[in-house]
Image (tube, rainbow, N blue to C red; front, side, top):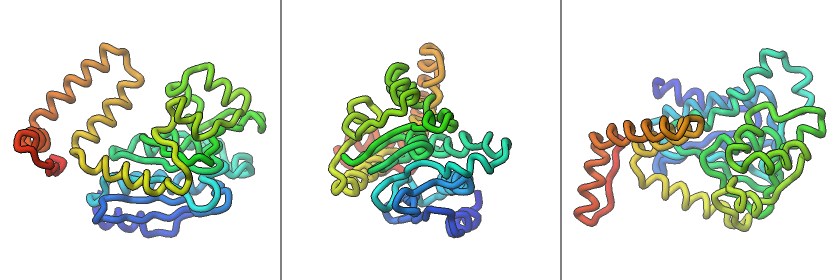
Length: 267
């Protein structure tokens, strides 16, 4: 994707969110900005997909952060929008929400307050979830006579198992940030006042690794999740062999031997 096209995609007015890129810190932030509940509209989902694709192609971005302003991350989607949307439009919802998962770069979701419905589904499609103590996760679609429609129950079952997924989906139960950490949904649970510090630390940690090795690991782990063990091991071997020929691997080995910090370039 041409860099000028990327910049144009990021500079347009977005529905309910903003985008900022800090090239010096190699970081991009996608910020939900429809407080207090940050309801996610139908057009917003498509725009979020386009932005993730643009940031994936952005040469100055190593890590992407999805976060929100206000009291809550997101209470979910615009309910009436489901009745008004065409069947063809609704059929694309899961593909749009999967954009963070398809992105080759690490994506961090920072969750606080309500994180319900599509807000939770978007977060589940990210690589890491850092949560505040105020965070409450839920898939409440049963209250509307529906089920999650953008991968929520499927991704959740992979993470926490069938019994806990039925508890959350079939009973529309909420869980706390602390429980999410205990169940393996979140990687960190901190007081809300420490969310920014915890996120900054994780961004800087991810930036110090080889971008080539990070991309390879993300793709390998995602593909391996849906593969038999023998196939996953075979894929890992091929990826390992390919990385052995990279400049980054040579730099990592030399830096280790010279007891210095590696300077990875992504090649």
